[in-house]
Image 1 (cartoon, helix red, strand yellow):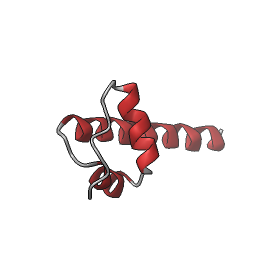
Image 2 (cartoon, helix red, strand yellow; image 1 turned 30 degrees about the vertical axis):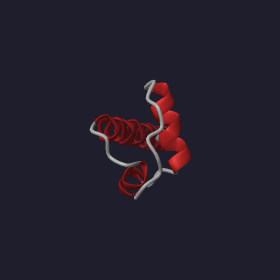
Image 3 (tube, rainbow, N blue to C red; image 1 turned 90 degrees about the horizontal axis):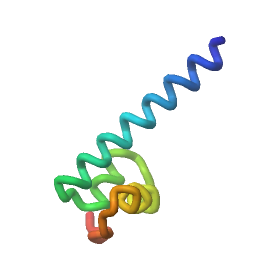
Length: 61
């Protein structure tokens, strides 16, 4: 039961991180800044952008 709870918390944290990343993308924050704040790789940020139907803006930091 403890393992299931831990996994559930981790999944919730991941979802919250993605929500924040999506908001940062929407306001036009550069990918490099989003990566630094979210601790996600640029490739993961680009994947989220594709899911949102956004075009990659660049990798400036």
